[in-house]
Amino acid sequence: MPQHLSIFDPFEGMRFGNHICFLCGTTISADQQTPVFPAWLMEEYGFAHEPLRLLDQSVVTYQDLKIPCCHQCQTQHLQPLEEKVQKALAQGVTGIRALDPKLLFQWMGKMFYGTLITELIKEQNPLVQPEYAVSEQPKMLMKFQAFFRVLQSLRVPMAFADFLPGSLFVIDVDASAEPTRFEFRDELSTMMFSLRLDNVLIVSCLLDNGMIKDAMKRVWQEIEFKQLQPIQAAELSARIFYAGYLLNVIPDYLVRATKPQDDHLVMDTLIDDVTNVIFNPWQHSSYAKLLATMWAKWGISQEDILRDPQEEPMSMLFSPEGEFIAFPQIPGQV
Image (cartoon, rainbow, N blue to C red; front, side, top):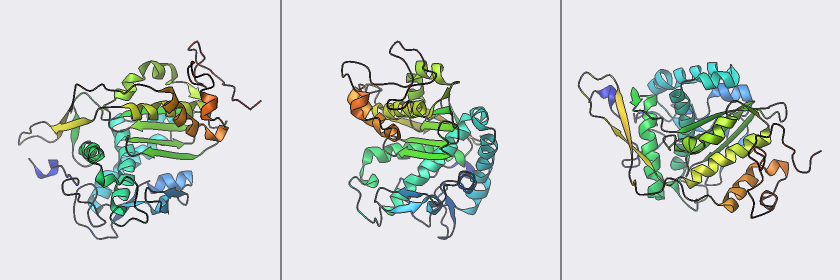
């Protein structure tokens, strides 16, 4: 295989550290780093100095969150991607929706992976030993390894055969109702990652081959081109995140055999255990608990959401008859 098509796999031998480029594995000096959240994004949305708590309970600011990266990967691969996303985001929801989904997947994936790498490096010398260390969970490491294989499309010319590795939802939020400039949420174990940037909300599962988006097809068709109130966007996020919890299969990725003249790799995908159900059963109580965390700022509790255990959980998106609610009435607010 030509050198420029070779894939780096840091999970073989757990090759993570401040002297190893996260993207290509080149040995670098400790000062060669790139911010997990791009500088232009932190400057535009003013969150560089906001605190972020890691799994070992240490607190860093977003601007302190950096990963080792060689000069070539920074200038040849990451910077061009950032420029494309920055240009698209300047056009708001319309620009992000028009962006190649593969580029959006890479952009979200790079930030997700950056937070993961930070956790893995810090586990070597943690402030407080995490209850469940990422590096000691084989199933999670298998997921991360599969994910990084397709994230190598940042550096290695790569085509996906009739699939996108993740589910991506771009949501238009009424920012005038709640002028939040930036919100970030991730869940390492389920590969979920979301960003709110003014009126643009991007929610993603980064390792499901689009299965969550397919499962939510009916809901998404109803909502995709509507502007949601912030409480509705939070509910949709909860539904997507909960689907990530229920997902019961792990996609794997295989490189199709190459020929000497090939200028890119083709990735095929498979599910290791096709006998498994794709999603575990939905449980109202578990969903309500997650939704309550998303709705905490509106003072809505899990008990409120499940006021009648025999009925569907409270929804600000749809009426009991299944009709979309244009302007939901928030409990406790006139």
